[in-house]
Length: 188
Image (tube, rainbow, N blue to C red; front, side):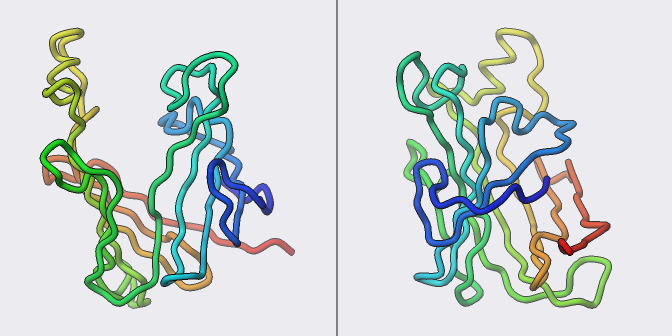
């Protein structure tokens, strides 16, 4: 990913600080059907950044699927600055639990370094579909859905002036992905 440029509007949001991102390589096809990707930031209420992904209305899976309708978008909290121990959540399950939450753990050393970073813990509950998880529904259809639909946790560390520098995701308590920033440069 790289920064494409400033964005006055970010999908359905219009935050004071907006940036459009450009995906150069997406081996996992996380943004396969994405039309645009933004970071939308507001300095009010503790400096908060959302990731906003827009989808064409004619794309299956778009929140506003159907020809002739407006583009749809999804969003999630990426980062916020408040005191450690604060958790911000988005969405609720049928059991009234937070579907996606982000906890500011503390300022702690970035793994493998002595550099202090902002440590966050994201928790996402398993998907529910007609009373069953997506995996249970998919198992009946094609026998195996892997980790699709399972809940997960992500520990992330942000470095001042660089942004996200380390991420470790776990599914069922087992490490499923580790991401580490290996090179950083600023435009000349």
